[in-house]
Image (tube, rainbow, N blue to C red; front, side, top):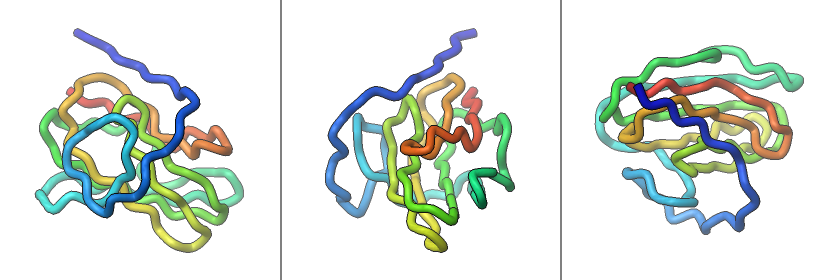
Length: 121
């Protein structure tokens, strides 16, 4: 079994292109149009609720993460380098195809809060 765990490194974010469907280095996330798995997390007072913990995802699945929070931050999917800006009360949607097997953190980048881990197999 191959286990990949990715960390966060300093980088300059790419501009929001409006559409992304395959994982590429450093890009802004938006929802994919293919059917797949929707994962929703709410963050209030720094505490995530909803689809948290380790979330299993079948390899090849189109994943849509919907994150709602009470603070401004950036949501980041490690390993896929998919990001989206989070504004209070306005959901951030990140979409990508789960093509890289392993375990990947999804975090609020500025706060360093881990929202969930994706287990892609």
